[in-house]
Image 1 (cartoon, rainbow, N blue to C red):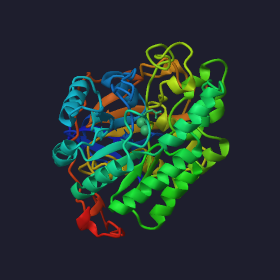
Image 2: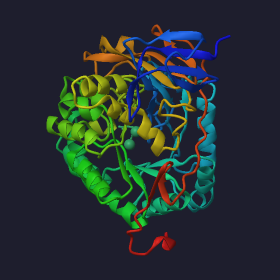
Image 3: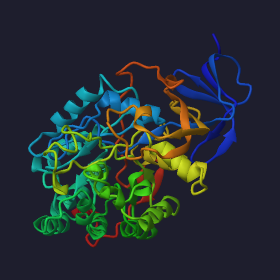
Amino acid sequence: MGNFDLIIKGGTVATAADTFRSDVGIRDGRVVALGHDLGSADREIDAGGMLVLPGGIDAHCHIEQESSTMLMTADDYYSGSVSAAFGGNTTFIPFAAQHRGQNLRDVVQITHDRAGPKSVIDYAFHLIISDPTENVLGQELPALIMEGYTSFKVYMTYEMLKIDDRQMLDVLSLARRHGAMTMVHAENNDVINWLSERLLTRGYVAPKYHAVSHNPIAESEASRRAIDLARLADAKMLIVHVSTPEAAQAILNARNQGLPIYGETCPQYLFLTAEDLDRDGMEGAKFCCSPPPRDKAGQEAIWLGLTNGTFQVFSSDHAPYRFDDTGKFSAGPNPTFKKIANGVPGIETRMPLLFSEGVGKGRLSLNQFVALTSTNAAKIYGLHPRKGTIAVGSDADITIWDPNWKRTITRSILHDNMDYTPYEGMEVTGWPKTVISRGRIVVEDETLRVERGSGQFLERQPMDPKTEGPGDKAPLSSSNTFGADLM
Ligand code: URP
Ligand code: ZN
Ligand code: ZN
């Protein structure tokens, strides 16, 4: 018997704050020592030439979830979590999605039943609130927040999910009172519908018109409105999957005023453009997601936002709908752009793409990469310091990253249940070699080493409503005109 269950030897450890040469000693699923000459272990992994990183946390992914039109994703909690693990993730936070008329408690139970027997990595759930009834706001949601479901997404678009501004204020003020985070899909539904109808009546039906109908102004207007509603309610808010320079600027302006507004962006806004929706035939359907990919100048603005304090979180928004009648063509073989299932896959390629094009090309430091792909999500969503860092006492969630592994992204190397990747043919340098969750080797030698259902549900603590998040003591702004007591 060694002193440790596992020692990772000879690697370079990087956290969001530091980069240092150290061995990592692991016992009972936790990091218990950092340093050199730690002693003996039951097992040693030679990490010479490797980076030793906190396991990735994908904080926005749709797994075994029905869409607004009740279309089931191609990935369930097994294939979704396996694909996440092969992409360097040790935790993910999919959604427990309420559809109108559903009781939140039932939704949470259904999602637990789906995830528990299948997930190979640890997981938490964000809620999706589409029906903020008196009962939901008065009873169900406060109780669930107390039980640790401390984040929820609301939509400003999608006919069957969207809430109006008044409902948004109700949700935000409740979140403020109970210490939860509201995530917002910010696109103006009327703008999208107005443009869509004009396009369709003129016969413009091809996939590329999805991007035309989801005009950047639909996103920037909704983002600014959402931020203003959060200001009014004196609540914190995270705007998800930001794609436009103007929306990014709105977030940065709010943050520069000291408001607790956070931003998330995704690979599709760095590596795809609206031109991808104009590929031959129906190929463009593979790239239809909301908001849609934009243009090259937009990509540069999103890259800038990753380094100038706009975005804290880089998530996949993995929304897997296959290029067949179970997914993209569930409404028929030649749907108009309005009927194509929205979403792109990317849970396995999120970290390699950002590492290769970000760290590898000098746009991001290694520490920024760790912050964006792991640490910040852990902090914002109440999982830190258990998750998102390599420190004594933290869970031993570690990705041993080979910074020199050159791979060409192609469908056959990925582990999700999809029949395409939007990043087909892209060459990247850097890929996770070994993935360790709570000291268990999950992926090694390109092989899955754990059983289905071995991931654990992560209980989160409700946050102190007066602070931005765990470990962050800045008070909320109290900049609204009424004072907090009306909220
Ligand atoms: O197109 C997307 N992003 N589909 C998934 C649902 C959502 O809005 O995140
Ligand atoms: Zn969304
Ligand atoms: Zn999403």
